[in-house]
Image (cartoon, rainbow, N blue to C red; front, side):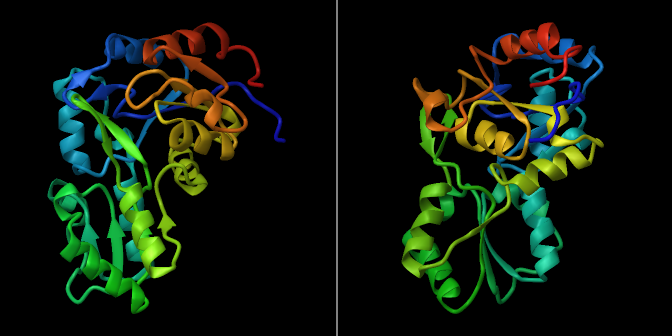
Length: 264
């Protein structure tokens, strides 16, 4: 195991951690400001695919979060990068509001399938079209495979169950580009010049946020907001480094305990 160092960066999930739909988690804006006043770098990492990065940024601005657009690293960006690297023409199963992040990508005569959160596209005809493309050799690219996410009216299915259905039917494995994949976390850290052992991740998803970050060499803090459910702490090995009631409490812990002492 790499030697732990002094904390240099905090990666922060967005939906479920800082906000739920158009409502901020109580005290999150003030907690973020306290964190910004400390000597650590901050990066926001999200699997959100229901809207483009610009729309997400505007939503956060309206909620009075001190966030700059270039501080947000999304799984949509990672997916577009992979599509361009592979030089494929994707069938995009993403929400219409997310299409802006694929502007300029050629999608005619598709030879790949890219799946995000797309409730309006998760119907038999569209899924069957994707299935047939995959059977004919098109790669299946999952922007992420979250089981569910939190809306104001309760938990809702994420893209994971639909991607798993395509995997099962076509007998293939999807390439996943977002959380919890290690390259996603490493790319986010690389952009701020930080190593995994110098960083902490805060999120509400025990597998994708915390488990993924810890697999990448970071420490993971789980918050009991958003999609958190009682007992989530026991769903990954090793368990979260820390579990807190919410983002403000996670920031309090970081500021009190993790700035001067080597991480362990």
